[in-house]
Amino acid sequence: MFSDAGKIVVIAGLITVVFGLLLMNFDNTAPSRWFNWLGNLPFDIKIEKNNFRFYFPIGTSIVLSLFFSLILYLINKFIH
Image (cartoon, rainbow, N blue to C red):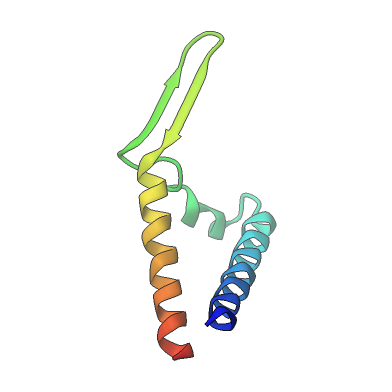
């Protein structure tokens, strides 16, 4: 039972690392424009004043949660 959960955590971690490395290697090239929508979705809250900044990415969190849930669902489907 725990070995299956361990496999899922390891696979999710590897996917996260690969995704992070891809994001780190994108400068201002064309592929980096694919991710410009991250942090700029309709439900992302941004408040900027003189000495104050507040950012709460609700929309981005929802989209990323759905994306990673789909990945974990597919991984679980192929493991079993």
